[in-house]
Length: 396
Image (cartoon, rainbow, N blue to C red; front, side, top):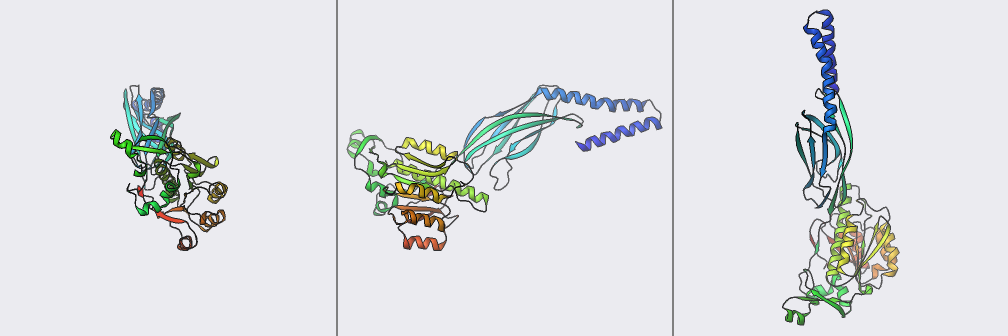
């Protein structure tokens, strides 16, 4: 805009000088035109300012990770003159590598007279969580690009990116290795009593099938075991790990979260309970899931967790809850940062020498070889390393 003003001022000054140097009827008329044109252009811009409207749809979006979605900006011009250009300032995503969110950017567009214009803004986000897309203001320029008017806005669209569904590998066939795996230890110690029946769901173990009723009803019927918190598995989710690379930090935060949800779902489907522990916005949190309907709450709570690491040390969470969980048969510690400090906490809490303790780490951030060797040789912990980018992982 600055260059247009300078250019227009130079032309006007030149015509004014020519009016004194070279007398002609044309020169005063040209000078008058140069004076009146900005006034006319300003009036048109002022009317456009009140005749242009902006709306954002949809107001809420639920999407999967890396799924392409987007919002639409609906611009309407109810005046006889076009609005060109119009500048929209809001939160938009750049399509650069490793772009993880939205930032304040400017979008230039135009709207023909007496018409509507729709601007599609696609985006694709690699991490779960809640995002807010805001439109802060629009700027309208006059025809000569000499003036502009700003209209403050408070338009928002809410975006929820869901965690990925991950699946612990389960062939559905009971083998000797299955019965000795940490995932099945809890099943071997659970109560043989059951208090309800239900239809078969994908992922149910064949051990829970009620064969007599299945034969009578000609459809698979599952025995729902009697729940006992003493027979529940415990999952410690480490949301405190932080790395030098912010992208890797957020990737590992999601990896812990998605793995914790997957293990929780597998145990609940098998008819057992889960106690999930993590450090959230309210500090150290513990949630007991005794039936599958409780899973939706945990899924929602994990989805909305902040996308930054917890400021508290993960070892504090284990030290706080370890005295009351030693009677449980299976304990999962899911962490991307298996370090000496965490190993010390596991030894002091007694979990290192507890049968059924499983530490799950990730191939992207492997544990030091010395720590891994020490765990295998000096503790009873089962150490599993999985690929966080895969939808499937093995708990055996």
